[in-house]
Length: 130
Image 1: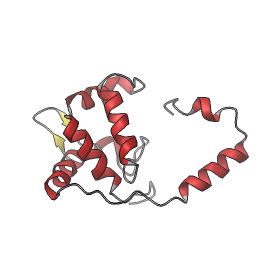
Image 2: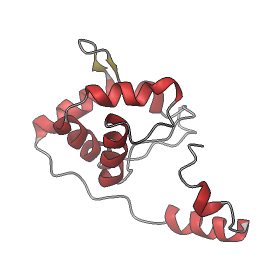
Image 3: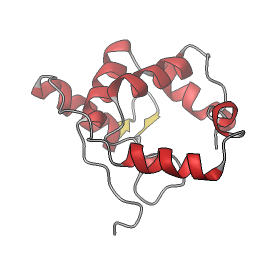
C-alpha cells in the first residue's frame, strides 16, 4: 500500500472496513467524459503506448489488469488528476524509484486532465480477466 489511507483505517475494526468496502464497491462508476474525440484519442494513446519521444511509458504497462499497481479505469477524474498533479509537483513521494514523479513531470496540465477524464470514462477491468 501507499500509506495514504493508513491514518483513517488502522484504528477501524475489520467489520467497519468490510462495510465500507461493500458500500463503495456498489457505487455507480463515474459518468462518461465530455472530452472531444481528439482529446480522448490523445489520452488513449498515452495510456496504451505512452510517448517514446519523451520517454513516457504507457500507463497500461504498470497499471494493466494483471498488475499489482492500482487500476486506473473508472477511477474518479478529479482523484486521478490530483494524484498526477501531486506526483508532478513533488507533493506525493511514495512511488518506487520516483517513477511516477518522473513520468508525471513530463506530462502537460492538458495531458493530465485528458488522461484523468479518459480513464474515468473507461470500464474497470477485473484482475481476473484474461
